Length: 190
Image (cartoon, rainbow, N blue to C red; front, side, top):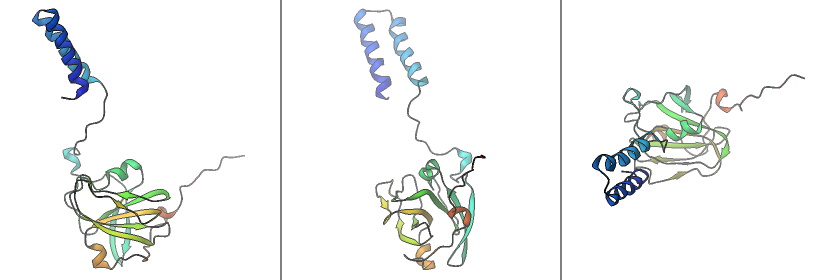
């Protein structure tokens, strides 16, 4: 039982016993605090996705080629989408993955919290050049995987893809224009 529910309950129960209140009044206080505690807003529960979700992200996708092989990647642009990443996925098809599009170039760090499949992680600069890569293993988020410097994109693919396709630091990945283009700004009429 969380402390915010337990301590008011314990206090109310001690007061009722000390005052010798009848059993109905002794239980009314604790029941009131439990009901109020359950209805009160608090930190969101950390649960797995709903059964219908099957762990698959509900995100837009893009197609791109890595070493002339076609891939279909989910696009994570918002911080919520990026935080979720590939969590809860138990199987990633061979030519699927995720690309993280950051609003500006900056150092980024990844981890494997609630991620159950090993992944290759590629860090790319704003031109699509691979700045660094590594293989991440499921470890409940204990290991951090920092970028080698400021990056604009990161890609997660099945572990072993980088080695099989020869994706090394310094190699350029051709990214679709809609990923590379800065967000459009509407000009106001004069």
